[in-house]
Length: 478
Image 1 (cartoon, rainbow, N blue to C red):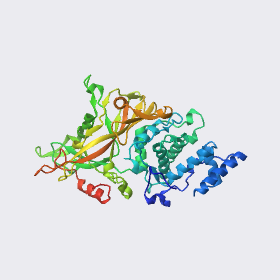
Image 2: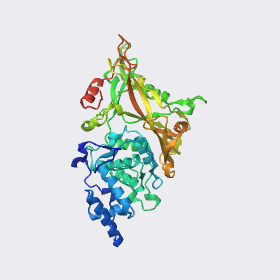
Image 3: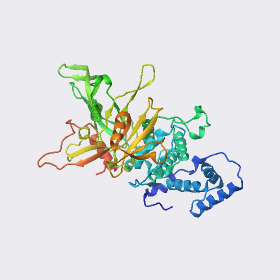
């Protein structure tokens, strides 16, 4: 099938048998019902259309499609076309002229899915590699990937994302092990209704299912004892979970800056009870140390647990690195109830991130900046209740922001929103932030060497090996 000019055809392996679901219509499985003459005519119309366009389907599959579309022929043909495109690996590109329609909330509990997918794919392409057809660990993962492509294609094309598509995503998530429940289990009772879940947990789940490479961090311990080989190591993360200072730790009128929270996360970690030899004392002592972390600015196909995603790490180039930040606004009190902090956190559109990045000795001077692409906000006292909305910046104009709210009506579900109000809401309710790591080379001053390993003189062990391995696997972009 020929895609429109606003679509991008994915790699040729997208059509290989190994990398596509075996049953294209698995998500439409329903018990058969009796057909009257009008249904027979509609089956014939849809069947003839698909046959003429090179996608013939068995009568049982045709009936399932029409049932999902309430026996409306035009809807069945439209749905079939869109699902076939998604199955063929076609992903619609972001278009600045799109008039979004977006999804309508399904069963009162789909806002965490809708808001997250809009933040990840609505107006930027940094996560598009997650939806590229490739070898994944299971058939269920391939089905979920296809359904997510269908969702994103409808979203970016300015078409309505029906509840049917939301149900498909829920069912595919459940097949992959997600806990939020399947729409097909919902029989109208409260007990079987699909539940609302934590948007950041869903993000981690999707990263795991779609095998996103890891963000490596160099960690170094600073103490007064003798240097030990365990003082420096590499760890990996996919999301940085940031603690908000308590109200007792803040001045009454002092605003909390996200940059200060990042400083605490990377540089203000005390480690107690480590054993090190102290030369001055001539013996081993139990001492305290400060743990300092810095980001290695490339994706790693391996983590410290031995997980290896090297087979397709080339799909995630350095220029599209997203640094997801989660603000831990919720805690559990001594009675086991969820408690939300009322602290406002100032969210900047740009963050000078150079001091948090590990620079290889001898590397060219460069400035690293975090650029805010989108955010998910949560309104409520518990992450499994309340309501999720999201914001995303325009693809070509950083002064234009879109608000997504699947409880709104019609064109108000996704609409342009005043930038000042977006950032006010993020300061009060922002929960999950997607920052793109941007590297800008700086001209070298004559006879001046590039700085060594940021604030610290020695890079962590394995830095060169990990960077070399990343280059060899082409996940590090020159």
